[in-house]
Image 1: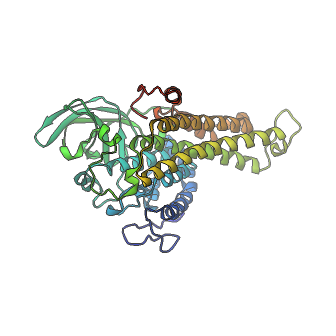
Image 2: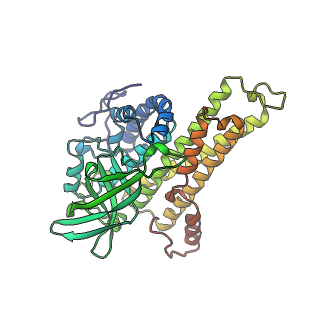
Image 3: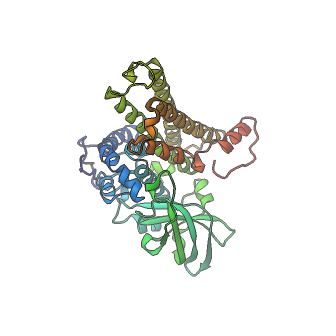
Length: 418
Protein backbone atom coordinates (compact mmCIF):
# COMPACT_ATOMS: atom_id res chain seq x y z
CA UNK A 1 0.00 0.00 0.00
CA UNK A 2 1.32 3.38 -0.92
CA UNK A 3 1.48 5.93 1.88
CA UNK A 4 2.33 8.81 -0.44
CA UNK A 5 0.03 11.76 0.14
CA UNK A 6 -1.31 13.89 -2.66
CA UNK A 7 -0.40 17.40 -1.55
CA UNK A 8 -2.82 19.96 -2.97
CA UNK A 9 -1.36 22.76 -0.89
CA UNK A 10 1.10 23.57 -3.66
CA UNK A 11 0.61 24.71 -7.22
CA UNK A 12 0.95 21.15 -8.48
CA UNK A 13 -0.18 17.90 -6.96
CA UNK A 14 2.51 15.38 -6.08
CA UNK A 15 0.99 12.13 -7.29
CA UNK A 16 1.56 9.15 -9.52
CA UNK A 17 1.00 11.55 -12.42
CA UNK A 18 3.67 14.28 -12.19
CA UNK A 19 2.43 17.80 -12.71
CA UNK A 20 -1.24 16.92 -12.17
CA UNK A 21 -3.30 20.09 -11.93
CA UNK A 22 -6.50 19.67 -9.90
CA UNK A 23 -8.29 22.32 -11.96
CA UNK A 24 -12.05 22.70 -12.15
CA UNK A 25 -12.14 21.69 -15.79
CA UNK A 26 -13.57 18.40 -16.98
CA UNK A 27 -10.10 17.16 -17.92
CA UNK A 28 -8.57 18.38 -14.66
CA UNK A 29 -11.21 16.56 -12.66
CA UNK A 30 -10.72 13.41 -14.72
CA UNK A 31 -7.00 13.42 -13.97
CA UNK A 32 -7.62 14.11 -10.29
CA UNK A 33 -10.14 11.26 -10.21
CA UNK A 34 -7.60 8.83 -11.64
CA UNK A 35 -5.00 9.82 -9.05
CA UNK A 36 -7.40 9.56 -6.10
CA UNK A 37 -8.84 6.28 -7.40
CA UNK A 38 -5.35 4.81 -7.48
CA UNK A 39 -4.92 5.80 -3.83
CA UNK A 40 -8.30 4.30 -2.89
CA UNK A 41 -7.59 1.05 -4.76
CA UNK A 42 -4.30 0.67 -2.92
CA UNK A 43 -6.18 0.77 0.38
CA UNK A 44 -8.69 -2.00 -0.47
CA UNK A 45 -6.53 -4.96 0.70
CA UNK A 46 -5.90 -3.30 4.08
CA UNK A 47 -9.56 -2.37 4.51
CA UNK A 48 -10.63 -5.92 3.71
CA UNK A 49 -8.05 -7.40 6.08
CA UNK A 50 -9.29 -5.19 8.93
CA UNK A 51 -13.03 -5.44 8.19
CA UNK A 52 -13.71 -8.16 10.76
CA UNK A 53 -11.88 -6.16 13.43
CA UNK A 54 -13.83 -3.05 12.43
CA UNK A 55 -17.10 -4.91 12.92
CA UNK A 56 -16.02 -6.54 16.17
CA UNK A 57 -14.78 -3.29 17.74
CA UNK A 58 -17.73 -1.28 16.33
CA UNK A 59 -15.40 1.51 15.19
CA UNK A 60 -12.77 2.19 12.53
CA UNK A 61 -9.29 1.07 13.65
CA UNK A 62 -6.74 3.82 14.02
CA UNK A 63 -4.47 2.45 11.33
CA UNK A 64 -7.34 2.53 8.83
CA UNK A 65 -8.08 6.16 9.61
CA UNK A 66 -4.38 6.95 9.34
CA UNK A 67 -4.13 5.20 5.96
CA UNK A 68 -7.12 7.06 4.51
CA UNK A 69 -5.71 10.29 5.90
CA UNK A 70 -2.25 9.56 4.52
CA UNK A 71 -3.76 8.97 1.07
CA UNK A 72 -5.34 12.43 1.28
CA UNK A 73 -8.88 11.12 0.78
CA UNK A 74 -10.47 12.99 3.68
CA UNK A 75 -9.53 16.27 1.97
CA UNK A 76 -11.16 15.23 -1.29
CA UNK A 77 -13.99 17.82 -1.05
CA UNK A 78 -12.09 20.45 0.97
CA UNK A 79 -11.62 23.82 -0.81
CA UNK A 80 -8.24 24.24 -2.47
CA UNK A 81 -7.87 27.52 -0.59
CA UNK A 82 -7.39 25.42 2.55
CA UNK A 83 -5.25 22.71 0.98
CA UNK A 84 -7.97 20.44 -0.39
CA UNK A 85 -8.69 18.99 -3.81
CA UNK A 86 -12.18 20.34 -4.60
CA UNK A 87 -13.06 17.00 -6.18
CA UNK A 88 -16.35 16.95 -8.06
CA UNK A 89 -19.29 14.70 -7.24
CA UNK A 90 -18.33 11.96 -9.69
CA UNK A 91 -14.82 11.75 -8.26
CA UNK A 92 -16.25 11.55 -4.76
CA UNK A 93 -18.66 8.78 -5.81
CA UNK A 94 -16.02 6.62 -7.49
CA UNK A 95 -13.45 6.98 -4.70
CA UNK A 96 -15.81 6.27 -1.81
CA UNK A 97 -17.36 3.33 -3.70
CA UNK A 98 -13.87 1.94 -4.23
CA UNK A 99 -13.26 2.05 -0.47
CA UNK A 100 -16.50 0.09 -0.08
CA UNK A 101 -14.89 -2.81 -1.94
CA UNK A 102 -12.70 -3.21 1.12
CA UNK A 103 -14.98 -2.33 4.04
CA UNK A 104 -18.52 -0.97 4.11
CA UNK A 105 -18.11 0.78 7.46
CA UNK A 106 -14.87 2.50 6.45
CA UNK A 107 -16.51 3.59 3.21
CA UNK A 108 -19.48 4.97 5.15
CA UNK A 109 -17.22 6.99 7.43
CA UNK A 110 -15.42 8.39 4.37
CA UNK A 111 -18.81 9.23 2.83
CA UNK A 112 -20.11 10.99 5.93
CA UNK A 113 -16.96 12.99 6.45
CA UNK A 114 -16.33 14.10 2.86
CA UNK A 115 -20.00 14.75 2.09
CA UNK A 116 -20.29 16.90 5.22
CA UNK A 117 -17.05 18.68 4.40
CA UNK A 118 -18.79 19.76 1.18
CA UNK A 119 -21.73 21.09 3.23
CA UNK A 120 -19.38 22.93 5.58
CA UNK A 121 -17.74 24.60 2.58
CA UNK A 122 -21.13 26.14 1.73
CA UNK A 123 -21.14 28.16 4.94
CA UNK A 124 -19.79 31.69 5.13
CA UNK A 125 -16.09 32.48 5.01
CA UNK A 126 -15.68 32.86 8.78
CA UNK A 127 -17.21 29.46 9.46
CA UNK A 128 -14.99 27.91 6.80
CA UNK A 129 -11.91 29.36 8.43
CA UNK A 130 -13.02 27.98 11.79
CA UNK A 131 -13.05 24.40 10.57
CA UNK A 132 -10.59 24.19 7.66
CA UNK A 133 -7.68 26.46 8.51
CA UNK A 134 -4.70 24.37 9.53
CA UNK A 135 -6.44 21.04 8.89
CA UNK A 136 -7.54 20.26 5.30
CA UNK A 137 -8.04 16.64 6.43
CA UNK A 138 -10.65 17.65 9.01
CA UNK A 139 -13.21 14.91 9.65
CA UNK A 140 -16.91 15.59 10.07
CA UNK A 141 -20.04 13.88 11.28
CA UNK A 142 -23.59 14.98 10.72
CA UNK A 143 -26.95 14.21 12.28
CA UNK A 144 -30.16 15.51 10.76
CA UNK A 145 -32.86 14.48 13.25
CA UNK A 146 -34.71 17.44 14.76
CA UNK A 147 -34.56 16.48 18.43
CA UNK A 148 -32.84 19.55 19.84
CA UNK A 149 -33.64 22.99 21.20
CA UNK A 150 -32.01 26.34 20.60
CA UNK A 151 -32.38 29.75 22.13
CA UNK A 152 -31.05 33.02 20.80
CA UNK A 153 -28.36 34.75 22.85
CA UNK A 154 -26.04 37.64 22.16
CA UNK A 155 -23.84 36.65 19.20
CA UNK A 156 -25.46 33.33 18.40
CA UNK A 157 -27.42 30.47 19.90
CA UNK A 158 -27.27 28.06 22.80
CA UNK A 159 -28.37 24.56 21.90
CA UNK A 160 -29.01 21.34 23.73
CA UNK A 161 -30.41 18.03 22.67
CA UNK A 162 -29.69 14.52 21.44
CA UNK A 163 -28.98 13.36 17.90
CA UNK A 164 -29.12 9.59 17.24
CA UNK A 165 -27.51 7.81 14.30
CA UNK A 166 -24.56 10.20 14.36
CA UNK A 167 -22.29 8.36 11.94
CA UNK A 168 -18.56 8.99 12.37
CA UNK A 169 -19.02 10.70 15.73
CA UNK A 170 -16.22 8.52 17.13
CA UNK A 171 -13.68 9.86 14.65
CA UNK A 172 -14.87 13.37 13.76
CA UNK A 173 -13.35 16.71 14.67
CA UNK A 174 -16.53 18.73 13.94
CA UNK A 175 -20.26 18.09 13.73
CA UNK A 176 -23.00 19.45 11.49
CA UNK A 177 -26.27 19.14 13.39
CA UNK A 178 -29.85 19.91 12.42
CA UNK A 179 -31.15 22.51 14.87
CA UNK A 180 -34.55 24.27 14.83
CA UNK A 181 -33.66 27.93 15.15
CA UNK A 182 -35.91 30.07 17.33
CA UNK A 183 -36.43 32.49 14.42
CA UNK A 184 -39.32 31.15 12.31
CA UNK A 185 -38.49 27.61 13.43
CA UNK A 186 -36.04 27.22 10.57
CA UNK A 187 -34.03 24.03 10.38
CA UNK A 188 -30.33 24.83 10.44
CA UNK A 189 -27.34 22.58 10.15
CA UNK A 190 -25.13 24.30 12.71
CA UNK A 191 -21.41 23.80 12.57
CA UNK A 192 -21.22 23.46 16.28
CA UNK A 193 -18.15 22.79 18.39
CA UNK A 194 -15.22 20.42 18.47
CA UNK A 195 -16.45 16.89 19.04
CA UNK A 196 -14.56 16.89 22.32
CA UNK A 197 -17.23 19.29 23.62
CA UNK A 198 -20.06 16.86 22.81
CA UNK A 199 -20.92 13.74 24.73
CA UNK A 200 -21.38 10.38 23.02
CA UNK A 201 -23.87 7.77 24.19
CA UNK A 202 -23.26 4.19 23.08
CA UNK A 203 -26.49 3.27 21.29
CA UNK A 204 -25.31 1.72 17.99
CA UNK A 205 -26.22 -1.95 18.49
CA UNK A 206 -27.06 -3.32 15.05
CA UNK A 207 -26.37 -6.32 12.80
CA UNK A 208 -25.01 -4.41 9.79
CA UNK A 209 -22.56 -1.53 9.29
CA UNK A 210 -21.50 -2.01 12.89
CA UNK A 211 -18.15 -0.30 12.42
CA UNK A 212 -19.48 3.10 11.38
CA UNK A 213 -20.22 3.92 15.01
CA UNK A 214 -23.49 5.79 14.55
CA UNK A 215 -23.92 6.53 18.24
CA UNK A 216 -26.02 9.25 19.83
CA UNK A 217 -24.38 12.64 20.40
CA UNK A 218 -25.50 14.95 23.16
CA UNK A 219 -25.14 18.72 23.52
CA UNK A 220 -25.73 20.45 26.83
CA UNK A 221 -25.96 24.23 26.61
CA UNK A 222 -23.42 24.56 23.80
CA UNK A 223 -22.85 28.05 22.41
CA UNK A 224 -22.83 28.33 18.62
CA UNK A 225 -21.79 31.68 17.12
CA UNK A 226 -24.25 33.06 14.59
CA UNK A 227 -21.85 32.65 11.67
CA UNK A 228 -21.96 28.89 12.18
CA UNK A 229 -25.73 28.57 11.75
CA UNK A 230 -27.29 28.43 8.30
CA UNK A 231 -30.88 27.36 7.49
CA UNK A 232 -31.24 24.41 5.15
CA UNK A 233 -33.65 26.28 2.92
CA UNK A 234 -30.91 28.84 2.18
CA UNK A 235 -28.65 26.08 0.92
CA UNK A 236 -31.48 24.32 -0.91
CA UNK A 237 -32.10 27.53 -2.88
CA UNK A 238 -28.44 27.80 -3.87
CA UNK A 239 -27.97 30.91 -1.72
CA UNK A 240 -24.76 29.99 0.06
CA UNK A 241 -23.19 33.02 1.82
CA UNK A 242 -19.67 31.93 0.78
CA UNK A 243 -17.74 34.56 -1.17
CA UNK A 244 -15.72 32.25 -3.46
CA UNK A 245 -18.33 31.77 -6.17
CA UNK A 246 -15.84 30.59 -8.79
CA UNK A 247 -15.30 27.28 -6.98
CA UNK A 248 -17.29 24.95 -9.20
CA UNK A 249 -17.94 22.00 -6.91
CA UNK A 250 -19.76 24.17 -4.36
CA UNK A 251 -22.26 25.18 -7.03
CA UNK A 252 -23.53 21.59 -7.29
CA UNK A 253 -27.24 21.50 -6.44
CA UNK A 254 -27.52 21.09 -2.68
CA UNK A 255 -30.33 18.59 -2.20
CA UNK A 256 -29.50 16.20 -5.09
CA UNK A 257 -25.81 16.23 -4.11
CA UNK A 258 -26.50 15.58 -0.43
CA UNK A 259 -28.92 12.76 -1.27
CA UNK A 260 -26.96 10.88 -3.92
CA UNK A 261 -23.80 10.92 -1.82
CA UNK A 262 -25.30 8.19 0.39
CA UNK A 263 -25.20 5.67 -2.46
CA UNK A 264 -21.41 5.41 -2.70
CA UNK A 265 -20.78 2.78 0.01
CA UNK A 266 -23.59 0.59 -1.35
CA UNK A 267 -22.05 0.51 -4.82
CA UNK A 268 -18.75 -0.55 -3.29
CA UNK A 269 -20.36 -3.28 -1.19
CA UNK A 270 -22.11 -4.76 -4.23
CA UNK A 271 -18.80 -4.89 -6.07
CA UNK A 272 -17.16 -6.42 -3.00
CA UNK A 273 -19.70 -9.26 -3.10
CA UNK A 274 -18.84 -9.88 -6.74
CA UNK A 275 -15.11 -9.81 -6.00
CA UNK A 276 -15.43 -12.29 -3.15
CA UNK A 277 -17.60 -14.65 -5.15
CA UNK A 278 -15.27 -14.71 -8.14
CA UNK A 279 -12.27 -15.23 -5.88
CA UNK A 280 -13.95 -18.22 -4.27
CA UNK A 281 -14.84 -19.68 -7.64
CA UNK A 282 -11.35 -19.05 -9.02
CA UNK A 283 -9.94 -21.50 -6.50
CA UNK A 284 -11.60 -24.19 -8.61
CA UNK A 285 -12.49 -26.27 -5.57
CA UNK A 286 -16.14 -25.38 -5.11
CA UNK A 287 -18.44 -28.17 -6.31
CA UNK A 288 -22.22 -27.90 -6.61
CA UNK A 289 -23.59 -30.19 -3.93
CA UNK A 290 -25.98 -32.95 -4.91
CA UNK A 291 -24.84 -32.69 -8.52
CA UNK A 292 -22.05 -34.06 -10.70
CA UNK A 293 -20.43 -30.60 -11.05
CA UNK A 294 -17.07 -30.80 -9.29
CA UNK A 295 -16.31 -27.20 -10.29
CA UNK A 296 -19.15 -24.67 -10.06
CA UNK A 297 -17.57 -22.57 -12.83
CA UNK A 298 -18.59 -25.24 -15.33
CA UNK A 299 -22.29 -24.86 -14.55
CA UNK A 300 -24.36 -22.75 -16.99
CA UNK A 301 -26.71 -21.81 -14.17
CA UNK A 302 -23.81 -20.38 -12.15
CA UNK A 303 -22.52 -18.54 -15.19
CA UNK A 304 -25.96 -17.05 -15.81
CA UNK A 305 -26.35 -15.88 -12.21
CA UNK A 306 -22.92 -14.27 -12.31
CA UNK A 307 -23.75 -12.52 -15.56
CA UNK A 308 -27.06 -11.25 -14.18
CA UNK A 309 -25.43 -10.04 -10.96
CA UNK A 310 -22.66 -8.25 -12.85
CA UNK A 311 -25.19 -6.55 -15.11
CA UNK A 312 -27.31 -5.44 -12.16
CA UNK A 313 -24.27 -3.90 -10.43
CA UNK A 314 -23.21 -2.17 -13.63
CA UNK A 315 -26.77 -0.88 -14.11
CA UNK A 316 -26.73 0.65 -10.63
CA UNK A 317 -23.34 2.26 -11.26
CA UNK A 318 -24.38 3.66 -14.62
CA UNK A 319 -27.49 5.29 -13.16
CA UNK A 320 -25.65 6.89 -10.27
CA UNK A 321 -22.61 8.00 -12.23
CA UNK A 322 -24.88 9.53 -14.86
CA UNK A 323 -26.62 11.62 -12.21
CA UNK A 324 -23.31 12.68 -10.68
CA UNK A 325 -22.19 13.89 -14.10
CA UNK A 326 -25.51 15.65 -14.73
CA UNK A 327 -25.33 17.47 -11.38
CA UNK A 328 -21.76 18.58 -12.07
CA UNK A 329 -22.53 19.70 -15.62
CA UNK A 330 -25.52 21.72 -14.41
CA UNK A 331 -23.22 23.43 -11.89
CA UNK A 332 -20.67 24.12 -14.61
CA UNK A 333 -23.36 25.64 -16.82
CA UNK A 334 -24.89 27.62 -13.96
CA UNK A 335 -28.23 25.87 -14.43
CA UNK A 336 -30.71 24.41 -11.97
CA UNK A 337 -32.01 20.88 -12.18
CA UNK A 338 -35.78 21.10 -12.75
CA UNK A 339 -38.09 19.40 -10.30
CA UNK A 340 -38.97 16.56 -12.67
CA UNK A 341 -35.27 15.71 -13.08
CA UNK A 342 -34.68 15.80 -9.32
CA UNK A 343 -37.68 13.52 -8.82
CA UNK A 344 -36.36 11.18 -11.48
CA UNK A 345 -33.00 11.05 -9.72
CA UNK A 346 -34.62 10.03 -6.43
CA UNK A 347 -36.61 7.32 -8.22
CA UNK A 348 -33.59 5.93 -10.07
CA UNK A 349 -31.48 6.07 -6.93
CA UNK A 350 -33.94 3.72 -5.22
CA UNK A 351 -33.96 1.50 -8.30
CA UNK A 352 -30.15 1.34 -8.26
CA UNK A 353 -30.25 0.18 -4.64
CA UNK A 354 -32.69 -2.57 -5.57
CA UNK A 355 -30.33 -3.66 -8.34
CA UNK A 356 -27.51 -3.94 -5.82
CA UNK A 357 -29.59 -6.03 -3.42
CA UNK A 358 -30.78 -8.32 -6.21
CA UNK A 359 -27.22 -8.75 -7.45
CA UNK A 360 -25.98 -9.82 -4.03
CA UNK A 361 -28.90 -12.24 -3.67
CA UNK A 362 -27.76 -13.91 -6.88
CA UNK A 363 -24.18 -14.07 -5.64
CA UNK A 364 -25.35 -15.70 -2.41
CA UNK A 365 -27.04 -18.33 -4.57
CA UNK A 366 -23.74 -18.96 -6.31
CA UNK A 367 -21.87 -19.33 -3.03
CA UNK A 368 -24.57 -21.48 -1.46
CA UNK A 369 -25.19 -22.05 2.24
CA UNK A 370 -21.47 -21.61 2.89
CA UNK A 371 -21.97 -17.89 2.24
CA UNK A 372 -23.42 -17.59 5.75
CA UNK A 373 -20.50 -19.08 7.60
CA UNK A 374 -18.98 -16.55 9.99
CA UNK A 375 -15.63 -17.19 8.36
CA UNK A 376 -16.99 -16.12 4.93
CA UNK A 377 -16.72 -12.32 4.53
CA UNK A 378 -19.61 -12.16 2.06
CA UNK A 379 -22.10 -12.58 4.91
CA UNK A 380 -20.79 -9.34 6.44
CA UNK A 381 -20.97 -7.59 3.07
CA UNK A 382 -24.56 -8.84 2.67
CA UNK A 383 -25.57 -7.55 6.13
CA UNK A 384 -23.86 -4.22 5.54
CA UNK A 385 -25.47 -3.73 2.14
CA UNK A 386 -28.95 -4.75 3.28
CA UNK A 387 -28.78 -2.10 5.98
CA UNK A 388 -26.98 0.68 4.12
CA UNK A 389 -29.22 0.46 1.05
CA UNK A 390 -32.25 1.15 3.23
CA UNK A 391 -31.09 4.59 4.36
CA UNK A 392 -34.01 7.01 4.10
CA UNK A 393 -32.40 8.92 1.23
CA UNK A 394 -32.10 5.70 -0.77
CA UNK A 395 -35.64 4.42 -0.37
CA UNK A 396 -37.71 4.09 -3.55
CA UNK A 397 -41.14 4.16 -1.92
CA UNK A 398 -42.04 7.85 -1.59
CA UNK A 399 -39.69 8.89 -4.47
CA UNK A 400 -41.61 6.47 -6.70
CA UNK A 401 -44.78 8.40 -5.95
CA UNK A 402 -43.05 11.79 -6.26
CA UNK A 403 -41.74 10.96 -9.72
CA UNK A 404 -45.05 9.56 -10.89
CA UNK A 405 -46.82 12.74 -9.76
CA UNK A 406 -44.19 14.90 -11.45
CA UNK A 407 -44.70 13.09 -14.75
CA UNK A 408 -48.36 14.12 -14.77
CA UNK A 409 -47.67 17.66 -13.60
CA UNK A 410 -48.64 17.23 -9.95
CA UNK A 411 -45.95 19.03 -7.94
CA UNK A 412 -47.60 18.97 -4.52
CA UNK A 413 -44.77 18.36 -2.05
CA UNK A 414 -44.41 14.93 -0.45
CA UNK A 415 -40.88 15.46 0.86
CA UNK A 416 -38.48 18.34 1.42
CA UNK A 417 -35.68 16.13 0.12
CA UNK A 418 -36.03 16.41 -3.64
